[in-house]
Image (tube, rainbow, N blue to C red):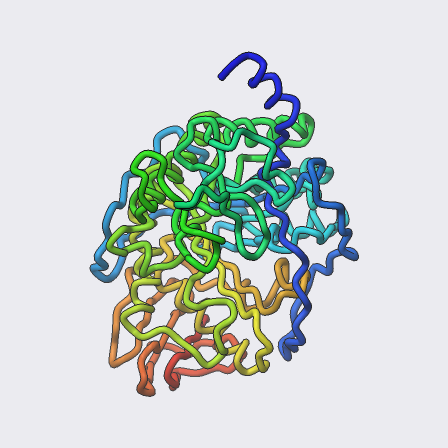
Length: 459
C-alpha cells in the first residue's frame, strides 16, 4: 500500500465505519404476571447513520471454577484456553452469570442511574458506544468486576460506504458484484484481505482509546464464524479470491477466526468476544463453530435453543437439545466462555413465555461450569434487554456434579437445590430428597414435568 493510500485511509476510515446499524424493532405486547424489576431506558434517540455514526458494544464477563461435563458430546476442534487473555470474574460469585446484549437495541439510551444499576445486575453487557461511554467510570465504581466490551462489526461496512475503499477490499460474487446484507444493506468485505483485518484491529484500538478516562475492557466483534453462512442473509454468494470458488464453511470460519485472533493479539490483555458460535449443533458440527476458540476465549451463541421468530410451541428434539447443553459443558471444560441468548421475538402468550423462560434457565444450569452467561429476552422492547427477573436471580448454589438423565428427566444437583428439564415427548416425574421451592414459589418434594418444560427448585 502506498503512503498516499495509507494517508487516505487514515483520514477516511474511522472505527465507527465498522459498527452495524440495527434499526429499532417494534415492541411486542408480551405481558408478565410475575413481579419483575425492569430497567426502563430513556426514550430512544435516533441518530443519522453515516460516516459520523459510532455505534459500539459492551460486555461484562465473570468466571467460576470449572467442573467436568456430563455427556459425551461429539466435541470437535476444542482448544486449550488462550494464554494471557483477560481473566473473567463474577460480581456475585454465583454459577448463574447474566448477559445484557443492549447492542441489539442500538438507539436506546440509558441514564447514569440506569447504567450503574445494569452494571450491578449483569456480568456481561454488550452495548454500543453511545449507550454507556460517559458512564463507564461510574459503572466500574459500582461493580469493579464488570467487564465492558465495545461493539464493532468484523465483516461488514455500512451501507453508505460502498465506495470508501478500493474495489478489491470488498467481497464479490462470481459476476464481480459487491455483496450486501439483505436486511441492512451493509457491504461484506473480503475477509481474507490483510488490509481488512488491519482495519478491524485499528477500529478496536481506536475505540478503546476514545474514552481515555473511562475504560472499556475490550471489544465485542459481531458477524464472525457461522454468521455469514445463511444464504438468505446475503445478496449473493461470495467468492474466495484465493480459490476463485465460493467460500467453504471451513474457509470462512477460519478466516473470521483469524480476524478475531489478530484483534486479541493487538489489545491483550484486554478481552475479545466473538459472535459466531450460533448454537450447540453447530458448535459440534461437521465443520465446528467451536473453532472460534482458536482465536478468542469468549464467544456468543446467539441462537441457543430456538430461533427468535419460531412459534412458542416449537422445541428442539431431545438429541438436539442435548448438544445445546453439552456445548456449555464442553467449552467450560476447556476454560472457554460461552454467552447464550434465548429470544422470544414473536407475539407469545404469557404461558408460552414463562414455559420457555423456565426451560431455558434450567437447561443453562444443567450445562454451565460457571464460565457461561445467560440472557433471556422476552420481547423486542428496549426494556427487555436489561430486564431483571426474579427467576434469573435464583441461587441454586454450587453444582454437586454433572447432570444426568434419571427416569426420563434430566437433573443436576446443586448445594442449594436442583435444576430439572424434560426435553422429551413424555411426561416425567422428579422426586427430591428434601422439600424445595420452585420458580413459581410452590414448595414440593415431587415435581411433575410435562414435555418441553423445566424448573429450578431451591431450599
